[in-house]
Length: 160
Image 1 (cartoon, rainbow, N blue to C red):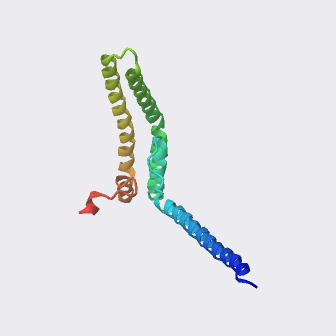
Image 2 (cartoon, helix red, strand yellow; image 1 turned 90 degrees about the horizontal axis):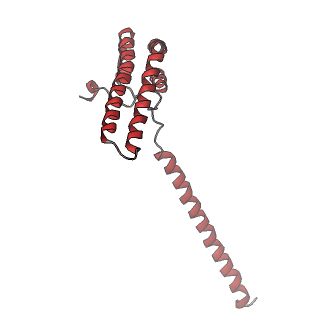
Image 3 (tube, helix red, strand yellow; image 1 turned 45 degrees about the vertical axis):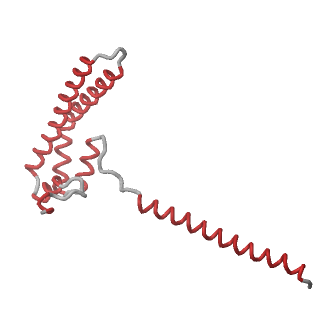
């Protein structure tokens, strides 16, 4: 065998090694990206626009008897909370419509803002009333769980 015949085989073997190493490096790179994406993905938020979903998530973190008390009170107050929530969402839409109106009317916007504030206060009061009534029936551990909601929040007494 001559040197000329051996040279092409040697260069092919060397290039296939580089190709194999390059492929391995790319695979490791993409696996690293996938792992970092999994690690960095934040946990799902405990906040949901629907207040009833938030109450269900809250109840899931409470002792079972307290969760039962919470959900029965929310069920009893549901019509009032839903009505307040519907009024608040409608007031928000009126606010947005006033901002988009052509020609723009600043006084109509101020009026929509006032309606939105009042509707938000009524909505907050309906939720807070349900929590106050429920808290009076809960154990200390249940009240602590509500105070620490969402679960990653620490109470101020634990931070001192």
